[in-house]
Length: 194
Image (cartoon, rainbow, N blue to C red; front, side):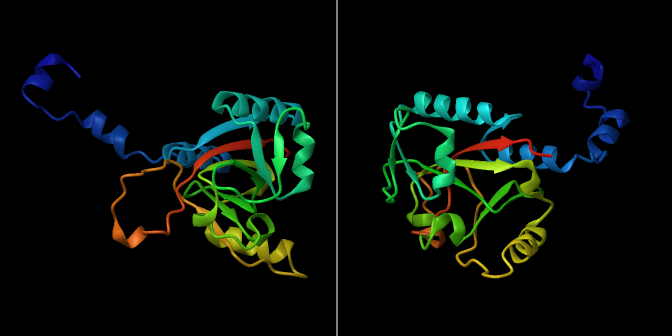
């Protein structure tokens, strides 16, 4: 915009038209955009060795030497010399877990009792490291819930919850959210599997 148009506040039709244009993003781009917009930390991995390297870097960056782990299959991404593993929940120890689905239109991460056991999100530690694959991406919450129903026909999980905010605000004085916060400091390790 030219200096005179700014000075005299003359509207420019081109700028207005550009701002009104809709952008169609792919499912993974839409998720990443919404996830990062909410304060999530996203690490894309094209192979499993990158998941391992990124996990080690997260632990080193935050000086974490312990992890809570409910899913033993995730222990393949590190060795016992990298970190001490606890199978018990401790609010001071970050947790490493998988998820059910990644919700693209909101940038949310959907969990169930398969990952959280019987714990509520508000009871979980503030620091999450989530492992997911690109095949877990769905467009919206409806598709995520349908996916859970399809994948777990024999035994539907309970405790279905979503983390919707990835920046922790200790000064949130909203009494409606008291004790119910699902804000987490969250790292997402997303492995390309398609």
